[in-house]
Length: 116
Image 1: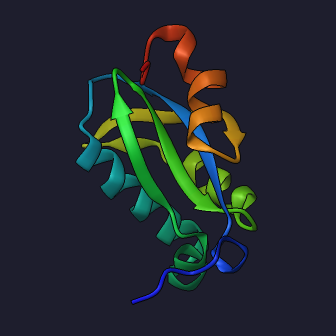
Image 2: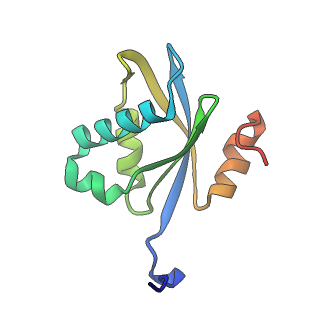
């Protein structure tokens, strides 16, 4: 199967985030709660249009991928997240970037997370 040309691919944005929680959480817990929060706030159709993916999560910080047209809705769904595994938690968005490399350099590398 042929690959799509770059001009035909869906554009993405990458949100660097920080987890503020009473207890540490795993990547799978975050994926479950982010999707649940987005689905309850936005509905299933808009959530699927957002195309939310948790790309990485280490030491309380990570990167989430979403559609470039749905950044506001994705941020709203992250702000609506209040609990992970029954413990109080929130995801604080550090910033948005067009590439994973730039998001890592600009928002996460100062703390030594995702460093090369």
